[in-house]
Structures are given as C-alpha cells and as structure tokens.
Length: 250
Length: 250
DNA sequence: CTCGACCCTGACGTAACGTCAGGCTTTAAC
DNA sequence: GTTAAAGCCTGACGTTACGTCAGGGTCGAG
Image 1: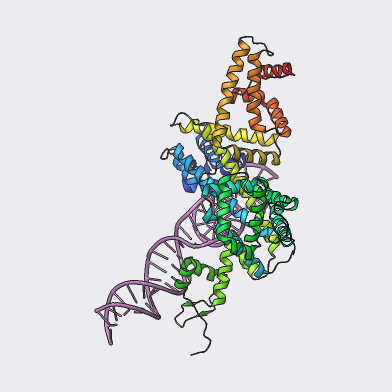
Image 2 (image 1 turned 30 degrees about the vertical axis):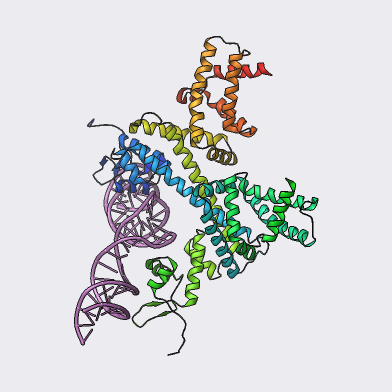
C-alpha cells in the first residue's frame, strides 16, 4: 500500500465528529459545497482532511447566517468578502426592523385585549384593523428614523410599561374632563397636577426628543376628531385646558 | 334575474381592489382560506361580499405575521385568540434574539477587518472562528438574561461606538505596558490616568451592572492566558498594575 | 451465512406565494 | 360577425436548507 495514506472519514464518522447530520453532508455534496474527494468502489463517500477543513469553513460561515450559495462563492473566490458582509448586515437590519414592528403591533393588539380573556373574533378583527390604521397614520407623520427610534424606545421600556402608559391615558383624560366640567381653574393646583401628569405621559412617548414631540402634535392636530371618536383620544376642549394650564405655569 | 342580486367580483377585480395578486387569491382558495362562494359556468371565481370580508380579515391577520394555517384556525373558531398571539409573540422574540446575535457576530467580524480592504479567505475564516469561540466562551460565563442585556446595550451604543471601544483597548493596554516598563508608580498620576481610562472602557461594557462586571472578571480570570495570546488581552502583570492603581486611589 | 449497522440514491414536504405554460372565455374594436 | 386583446382557468416548478422516509446495496462480527 502506501499509495497515498492520509486519514479519510465516512459520512457517519464525519457527521458525528462535526455535529451535523448525514443528510446535511449529502446536501452539501449535492450543492457542490463540500464534496468528498474520493469514493470507495461501492460508492461510499470518503472525506479527506482538506474536505473536512472545507466543511469547517462552511460551518463557520453558516454560523454567521450566510446563505449556502454565498458561502460557496466566498470559498471559491468568485465573490468578495467585504461587500457580501455588508449586504448581509443590511439584510439582517431590515429583518430586525420588520420583526420589531410586528412585535410592536402584536403588543398593541394584546394591550387592547386586556380584561376579557375571551374576545370575539369580530371584535378582535376590528381591533387589529384599528391597530393597523393607527400604524399607517403614524407612518405618515414620522420619518423612518423616528420610527426606528420609537421602536427602540419601546423595546427598552418594555411591554409592561407601555401597557401601563396606554392604560393611564384614558384615566387621565377622564379626570381632565371632570375638572373641566367642574369648572376648575387652569392655573389652580388640580389643573397643574393634571398637566404635569399629562406631560409625564407624553414624555414616556417622546423621551424629550423635540422632533418626535412635534410630529406627534401634528398628527394629533390633523386627526383629533378621528382619534377622539375611535380611540378615546383627547378632545380639543381637553387639549385647550391642558395648554391653558401649561401657559399659566410659565 | 333578480334571483339573488348582490355584487360579485372576479379575481382580477378583487385583486386590484385589495392590492394582492391573483396568484395569492388562487393560493388562498387552494388552501380553503378564502373560497369564492360561486363560480360562473365557465369556472370563473365569483367572490361575494362575505368572501371579500373574509379576505380582509385574512389580510389583517396576515399583517401581524401569523401563518396562514393559524389564520384559518382562528377564523374557523377552532383555535383561541389569546394563546395564539402569545405563542406568536414568543416566536417573534426568539427571532429577534437570534437576529440580534447574528448581527453582533457580524459586527465583531467586520470590526476585525477594518484596515485591509482585501482580506484573504484564510485570514477571514480564522477571524470568524475566533469570533465564534469568543462567543461560546462568553455564553458559558453569562446568563441568558445578561446576554440579552448586553445585546440591547450594544444595539443602543451603536456599531461605531463599539468599534471605537474595541480599538481603544489594545492602545490602552500598550500604554499600560509602557508604564510598567518605565517603572511607573501605581499611585502616581500617570497610572491613575490609565486606571481611569481602564475603568471607563470597562464601564462601556457593563454599564454599571455589577453582575455583568463580575461575570466578565470571572471569564477574564479563567481565560487570561488564552485571551492574552490570541486577542491581545491584558496580561496578569497589566491587570495587577491596574488593580494596584485602583487600590492606591482608595 | 446471516444480522445489524451503515451506506447509497431518489423523492416528497416545508411557507407563501412568483412565475411560466398551455388552453379556454369574455370583451371591445373593427 | 369576426378577431385580437385581455382576463381567467388548472397544473406544475422554483425558492431555503435541510428532515424524513422508502427501497435497496455494503460491511464487519458472530
């Protein structure tokens, strides 16, 4: 013997020692990604050391989430590394944004369902439509960057905090209305307390970012009637009351 | 005439007015998700109003990223809303984590490539392996929760900041070594400045979280030799110098 | 010689459609 | 009335990275 020597592995051995399945090795062979450099007479795949190295390279690149085709191009040198990574990063970023938005919508829907555990399908659909139309309205008033900031802030605050803030609005609005009905003075302590709460809740939303705050005001101004009827948003009278309270403070 | 009245739509019309493709309607018909309640003699699909409503419901649910099968079960009442949403939320969360981790690994790899625009494939693979083994080492020392915190912090800091911090370490370590070589006094002003920088960089990592800091110390202590040789991490002598400088300050 | 472990190829399934291919129907123009 | 364009039909393949059989050879041990 001594023709060539060198250790070789059969599929099962290689699969075991690398943690992948036999099927995966078949698959990579089929794609031409990792081909055994020899076969036995009966057709068994025989992987040499160079093949194993190539397999490890493929697995490392796969770890980064690269598509197998791109991995093949990389290893064959028919594709540059830098641009590929850049494209992949951009792709991942887009996926992140998409998933985060989905997650935010889901949270909104879930927030609207607190209470009755059993919601009818009809109500549920209505709720989803509301969430979607709100989403679209919001998209029209905020830039992509602002939306990304908002999504990040939401992720940071956590679902619970957001649910609490959302639940706090109707309560606060109701109390503002009571104050108005009772003829409270915008400069008085009750109104000042309400205005402070109001600003606090708003701050949870925009986090001190003036751009966000302005966009929110524009959206609210343009859609006041719709928001009031459909989502229990503040009425113009309530907005005026808060504005007057803020003005009185300065 | 006058048999039943009621408006009906052909596929193309419905597709146009809802923004989906004809193929999608075919697909939903095939799945039994939205079936036209009538057909012409020649086989054309005729969608009645109820069908259109069902289609809108499907599209709304699809917006949430639910799989079509789940949508069908929801609309048929054979599946409850709450648990479904919860499962879907959890699924999205898992995806987020996975993508964020991928993205972090990619950033690490990209950070290791700054400079030479053209990196050889071999070097590149070596780099990826490094990143992966670091990743696995880290995973062994931090809890899942801590890892999630770290990922979030990284996302917040932004790629540039992280790259700057990573680039700052070797520089700082080199200067610490110079100070040691020069026989600097750990209590002296030069050493105090270096220690302050050191703590500042560390703080960029753990953000004041003691749990994170402790885990990091444990990892560094256990793997000091490996880190030093492979990634230019601080040597025990350098760590001691910084420790002495900190001790001198108190 | 046989049995169990291991190997082979080939093919279907996955999610949600996109994209032909080949052929019938309806509609609008001429 | 005819004809061409537009619209509709069904059926089937392709996409991603394999999982999961099915049917059938091969190899080593007893």
